[in-house]
Amino acid sequence: MSSFKGSYEYSVDSKGRINIPSRLRKYVSPDANDTFIVTRGYEKCLFVYPLDEWNRLEQSIRDLSPTNPKHRFFMRTLLELATESQLDGQSRVTIPRELLQFAGIENDVLILGVLERIELWNPIVYKEYLKTQAESYESVAQSVLQK
Image (cartoon, rainbow, N blue to C red; front, side, top):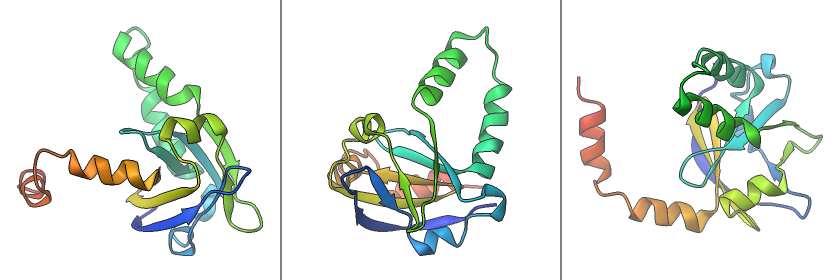
């Protein structure tokens, strides 16, 4: 089970490759076989799942009803740009142009560890996302962590 955390700023090379920081790589299970699934996320970011975590997510997607229009829309939207990427010898994954364009990632990328997945953000878009939150971190934490 992955336990990604932390934030890192890196650059994207001309071929769309992004280095996965060593502090995140140490949480990738051997079951992932250095394979990641990259797809669109929420709020204009990209989700990067190690293969074993993706397989767990995929199983829950398979449990959705194909007769429900919202389920179909979600499946299509999540999977249409999903792609498999193998870590290369320099610990990079290749991100397809369509996904980089979706997230507005050009030269710089903010890499966030979010438990079972890694998120890739344009650093400016992420700062704007944080500014648009109606509630403070403390207020959200109180409501989310309330037992």
